[in-house]
Each structure stands twice: as structure tokens, then as C-alpha cells.
Length: 137
Image 1 (cartoon, rainbow, N blue to C red):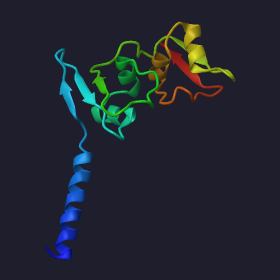
Image 2 (image 1 turned 180 degrees about the horizontal axis):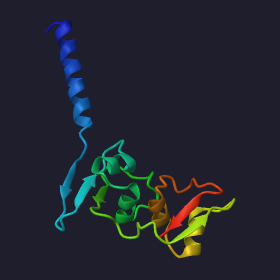
Image 3 (image 1 turned 120 degrees about the vertical axis):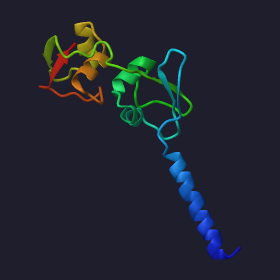
């Protein structure tokens, strides 16, 4: 095999591996009909949620994930379907005061961080700011 042929084979093999690695979903249906996704190395909960058209917080809540930035390869993640409960934006409106956290606000209203984050489209529950108006479901 010539040097040029070896390089072509190597390039084609590398491209095939890259394409195979970018396939979206090693998923299967569980006995109850929900979709279960097996996390691959390099996946993020955000990317998984986007590929299934689901909210990050809905996946986190359905799987008991307290930190959506901490998932691991091989983890089985249930992908919820339909509108999750507790996502209504009706209810009280809270204006964030300086020094408040989403955790403390959730405690004050008897709800969860996830419910408030989901109702307000908050991607990072550690980032809220004074003056921000939050719908409390």
C-alpha cells in the first residue's frame, strides 16, 4: 500500500469515527413507555434536552439530578414527555432582592428551585440578579 493510500484510509477512518461519535441518541424505550437515554462522554444535559425538545429542568427533575452540570458517561437518563407538573407561570411574582438566592426564595414560598427555574426559563439557578421578577408557581 502506498503512502498516499494509507493517508486516505486513515483520513476516511477518522471521518467515520467522528460522524459515528456525533450520532444523537443511544436511547431505548423503557417498559413504561418513556425514553431512556444513555449518557455518552462529552454529553451535556443541555444538549440532550435540545435533541429531544425537552426542558433541562424537566429532565433534571425526572431523574433527581440536583446539579445539571454533573452527569456522567453511562448514566441512564429518563426523558420525560408532555408538560411536567409544576410548570405553570401563574401565581405570585417575586422581585429578587440583593443577596437573595433561588434556594432561599424557593424555601420562602414552599416550592422548589427547579419549579421556579423552569417557570422562568432560568438555565443556571446560581445566576439571578437584584430586580429580576420571578413567577412563583
